[in-house]
Image (tube, rainbow, N blue to C red; front, top):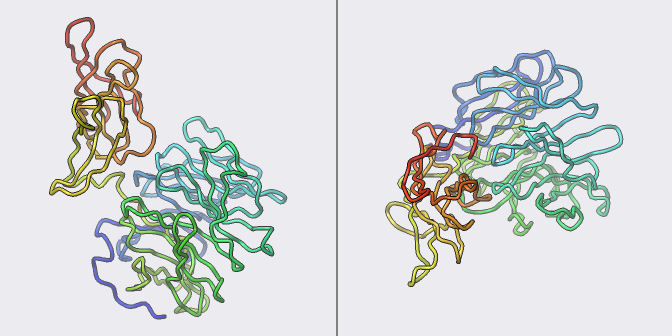
Length: 413
């Protein structure tokens, strides 16, 4: 299938992609606008630099490099500067994926005898094993809500074919939380979760089940596996757009020895080549979406029913429509919501712990709410963010008088 021109609406003007190309002699990492313009080379090293991924806030890039010997994990800024080495293993690191809250990076770890899915805590430097029960673990992908990781691995029960697995990282029992999503006679690889902005939970992947590698999508539980591309050469490595409505991938459809990057709608239509140098261009990673689509959105409290026994925080588009519950507690009063400047969090007052304290939660309701002022025996109300989001001011009543305080960034970041 030859890519056809796409409507401009297929790509958001502000979107960027990362990818790997050997156009300058060896594998290096590049950044470009999602339409292929604005090309910038980020790494310049004799060793291979591969597997780039964006941090959730879009301000950093993690990648794998052989510059100091074996494949290790590094980070850099968007201009390719401030490079920092994060791991020092005897085994090789591959295919990192950043947790949605930005605190961890998961990756595959390989040596001659073992294959492990592991995660690095970026603050403490602690490495945790998530799964070591399967062989040839590769291409992990963190779910948008941070509770699960999808990855590819060899399934010993199906003639050594590769399948897409999903593991719930909250469960202490790996065997109980590990699910084979594809369980097919073909080789399935490179899962990619659809961003939460799309309000769905699909996973894109590539598979050779129909003869050669093509792009497929499925529901997060493995249902409705659907083929999107039909090409004589391999289509691999899908990556979702920030809106969750388009998919970029690598293809060899126009040159026998080279590969290019193509973008299409999430139904397989409007395929368009965006990176087509005379080189291998692969491992595309689309810029992540904003943490919350806050434009024209309101946050307010909603009572369950009279008499008032509890209130919860909900969000709604300014023009009306359905409500989205940020908190949902039947016996807790939650009030005075305040957006963070970047729209990613909401601060509020709640009596969840007894007294009214100041809490913070992700604006989409994901993750656990954090109590910022629970160490004070006072009634804390009416939070207000500083313009840069580094502090929260609030009212506190103890003992008998109202005062104004602020809590620094260490309390909620």
